[in-house]
Image 1 (cartoon, helix red, strand yellow):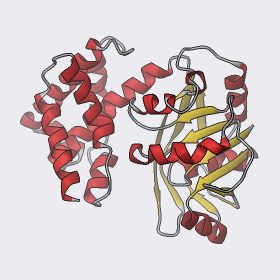
Image 2: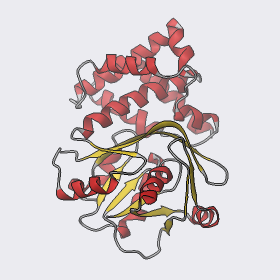
Image 3: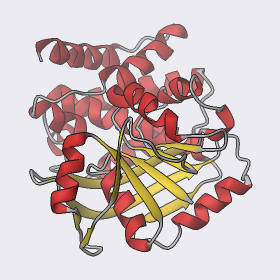
Length: 304
């Protein structure tokens, strides 16, 4: 299959690089500056799973190219609209679209531009960063992409995609229940990012202090009530699942949202927290902690 990876950063560059390393037909859609960087330095990955250096195939928006069989979107939500415009010339009526964004609300935007049945669910778990030379540093053993049909129907094209992804040094898993997995990650990201950005602290001290722990648990209760009201496909006891996951995180762990704020970078306030707040408001659910977190992020954005 011909695969297009939108971006060659810490996420798309890693997973796309592993597929190219395996020998798959991978092209990266990048900006002109990143194209020049990749031409000069190649695509490098430093990882406990093995270091690689490859000369990737790259494409800049507007350049002519045949359509692709599948497109992976690993952009941030605030870049998604432009990414959609950029990839349209490289898709056809059968191209699969696999978004790896956090959250849920991006699916509606994608459905405005592509056939609903071609838009898969997707998510990924990885800790990786990009250095000043464009090299990718994979900093933990975790490197999994999960994808699957949102309606559960395993079509021939999805099975062909799964075959193409299988066997690389990164983990690619085809899920029969991708929407549940996406919602579970959304709730985890919302609570973890929410409290760490609010308190400007790693998770450890937040768990240890009774007052902050109580606020964290209140946030969990608010998002649980919201997703139950909209009948999202979450497991019973999702609140206890979230508490357990938040307890397992390393003492000094910060959320990526918190790190982005520390660097003065753009954040996904509306995509993650504004959307959850809108769902709660629609169902007349009171979310005082979520409201404060959202307000905190909006003030941050207004000061940028």
